[in-house]
Image 1 (tube, rainbow, N blue to C red):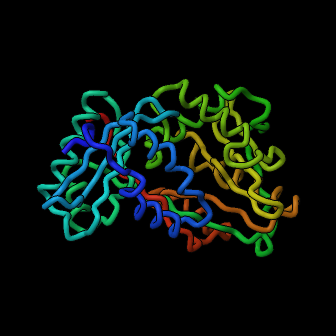
Image 2: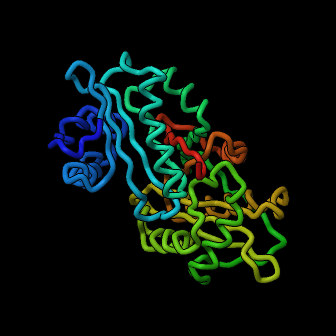
Length: 304
């Protein structure tokens, strides 16, 4: 059923989902993040669908274009109770979502289905969705000892290159990795994302704990650190181009950043890693451990 001809109270429909996410991610203002979505849903500015059984709402969904990455759409599906989930009902929603992706020629990004279960998980896999799980790791720098490590390549600082050069190098490093889905296929989107990053979207950039390495004048790797609070820092990005891996460059970048962060009196350092990325072994060797913060989960499918 399409809600276009009804005045649907999306604030009430999404209330339990929002409460669930607020409890799961207490450090994020989930309610504020949903305000714009609810407003657009109430005004029918984004596509939505509801499912009713015996006059009771049992499921809902909506689709919206990404504001920052113009090669994708985002979808959200929820069931009021797991007992309502079956393949027939899932098919109604996902035929609709896949058609939207096909018509727009865009990738589809899907949040975990609210009240998901084994049936929905298997269904997503059966229609071609991939699942990415990114986990947070933390290092207590009190337990970290300085590591002296060198590189044969030229070094520099991210502040000394343009956002275009940084964005191109980062994309080249990640485009065939398990994290490729994070990056827009549109170059201008990627450049603007880097600009936002450098402008403090995820904390003030700590250039004293950031680094690039070059080969023949071209950027082949980088580590970028930011400040969360007076004693906490984040490694926002660390990459090495494929042709220069297994040369110790990843370790050089990581340990160089950690050495500087320790010298700057930070106590904790965080980073996110895809569970399919073998780099987590390098992070573990440096002393990082998975913490108890909930993982980030996203389902995605390339242009249908």
